Image 1 (tube, rainbow, N blue to C red):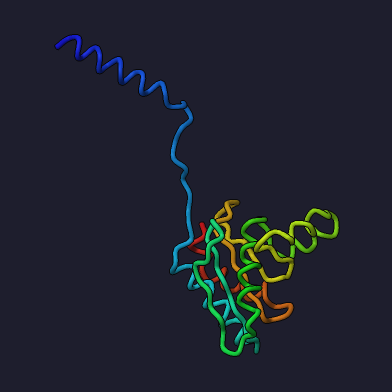
Image 2 (image 1 turned 45 degrees about the vertical axis):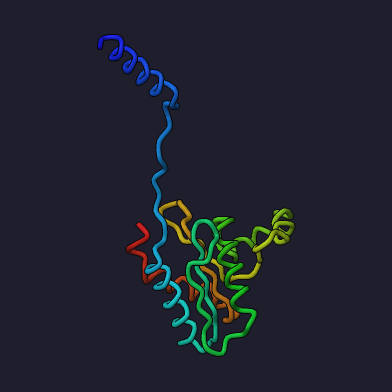
Length: 162
């Protein structure tokens, strides 16, 4: 019995020492479908109230579409533009307007627009919890007002983005 106990104790010590001291699970927040729907529906309604037919897309932290809404009478290109704006805002962790501004002083930004899914058009906004970007939202179809409409959707859910 004693050799068995010693063997088990030795095995446990080896197993514990094999794991790195800093190994632990990552803690993070992800956007729920309900919150994503609220953002999208509010942004779409805000632009509709301003007289614009738009589409809106929300992507998760992996760049996959959570919600995609095409408003009545919106152009067929607006869905793809909205998706790419959301993806760009997520992956570069900045609004697509900031991305555009960055292009003026950082030529690499222009080259990055050749990456699949990236677009340099105003209307994409990252969704943040603190400094952690957890999603992206893009809206298309209201020239010059896209980001404003997205921000109204984000304002509606700000209590969840803590």
